[in-house]
Amino acid sequence: MDRRGFVKGAGLAAMMAGLAGGSTLATATSPAWAEEYSVSPRSSMYRLLVPEIFAPLPDPADHVPAIVIGSGFGASITALRLAQSGTQVAVLERGSRWPNDPWRDIFVADAVPDGRGFWHRTTFTGATRIPVSVDPFGGVLDVSSYPGIDVWRGACVGGGSVVFTGVMIEPEQRFFDHVFRGVVDYREMHDVYYPKVRKALRLSPMPDDIYHSVAFAHSRAWDDQVRAVDYTPQRIDGIWNWNVIRDELAGRSRPSATVGCSNLGNSNGAKFDLNQNYLRYAEDTGCAQVYPGHRVDAIAKEPGASGRYTVTVTKLAPTGEVLRTRTLTCDRLFLGAGSIGTSELLVCARATGALPNLNEHIGEGWGSNGDVGLARPLSSLDVGTQGTPSASRILDEAGAPVSLENWYIPGAPPYDIGILASLGMVLDDTRGRFVYNPNNGRVELQWPDDGSAGYLARAQEVNDKADCRCPSTAPPVPGGDASITSHPLGGAVIGRATDEYGRVCGYRGLYVMDGAAVPGSTGTVNPSLTISALAERNIEQIIRSGG
Image 1: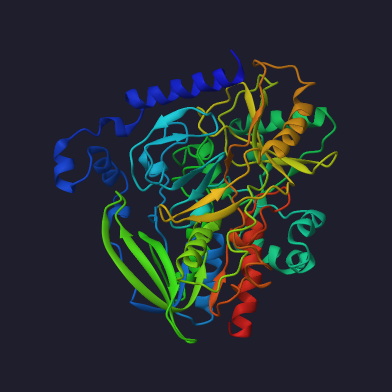
Image 2 (image 1 turned 120 degrees about the vertical axis):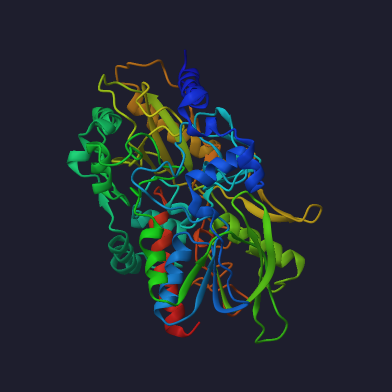
């Protein structure tokens, strides 16, 4: 059996076992629940598992001085700094605000997903390429499908911080400068803003006791393989609360991050996500409030030089039911809905005449960060449990610069199955663009038909180098996959669609504060640290200058 068949069989077996009896949701069949809550029986079970997300949702005032759209890294930082300056802020987030608990089954496991995992989808095809049926529900991960590429992004309070693998790395200066081309000063970022974010998020590498635990046998095997071909694995910073992971290993918490859970959330709060820091700190000021279940559908500006911004919102239940539609106003509008969300709002506003002065760079410069999912055979008999924090990375500059990160296998059973996974990120200049389709009123991503070909081949080259000299305990592993990215960047690029601090060209009081501002790549590293540091830099300047 080849690697694809091996993973497919293992993943399918686990999935079927879960649906047959291992999943608590498989027992949710009572029609009384469906009648009482006017939702499906399985949605009723979600109500029992996570009642907090079904609580009545607050409504923002009709007018707020500042509105922040989204609640991911850039949005949360913006909200905190505005609130600390005394500005009243409303944070609008389409998804739910999920709790944490060390023993409750709040989020769903990556290997056996259900509706809690995905934003209103009925099927999902992940890294294993196995199509899985799920309930349509307001889960935490939005999978947006475009020709040639699927984009993974957060759909919950805390955004991407809830559904990523926790890696936060500063890029090499030469790669940063290649991407930003002098618009942003690397030394300023390195000396001031990267450290500021590291401190706020308590970033640190994996401690030795956790690295040597049973959960990270695959990490040790990965490091051994790259050392065998003369790479030096570099320990990498993560956003994890290592004490919670120690609790898992010691039986003081329900296992989560130590058994292959990450992309669909960690129930016990093992990830030090934005709900535990920036967002909480913003609310603690008394000047900021987060509004879950508020999807922003359109933005515009009232006529006149001093006109307010209008924000059309739909209030949603977790089931997708529309509760209310409103138009809010604000004096200043901060876009932090992520590369896809922010770009969609701006491109649509320009095309429909709601914001006609937006320039020609709106929608341009989108990239996938050169993401490639890779695998190779496991060469160790030491079997572990697919711990999800990444321990290390390597960097290869023999051709186009590429990094490989030690990764778990998303969607596979929570134990090592004879395969090692890597996330590759190539410094690649392939770019797409967002365009408005007047026939359906949608914003679409135009991605080149062969957009991933070059960086896919380069990442495979580095992965194959580590593969070729290692005696294997598993069958050969073919290829890599660049049809998925969890690192969408660009669409409103800094210095083009905006000035050098995120102020949108053509409009005073309108700002881009998220990954849409980043020019398609963060230089062979995960984008979250750079997005965060850029937001800290930009909002500081915006507040200092009065706008």
